[in-house]
Image (cartoon, rainbow, N blue to C red; front, top):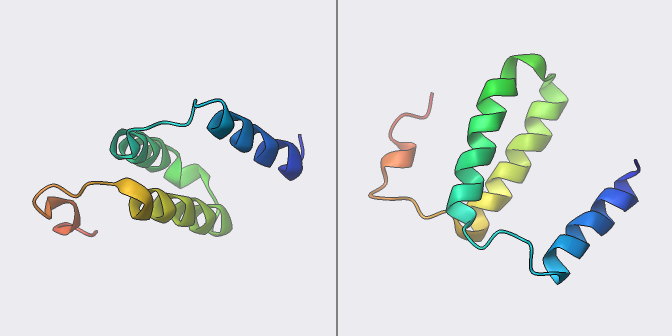
Length: 73
């Protein structure tokens, strides 16, 4: 697998209409997976995956009543 092939897979998912419409659910699922894998990841991978999560958040995560940021750590 190469980065170019993965990017092509992302594009194909989008063009075929298979990209998730509900980004809130996608972001929540990604956060749950990341939390479960956190201890197995090195700092560089954590940083990269947090960047992906931030992009998901920016693109459509609906923060209900601001509660998502009350407990940052």
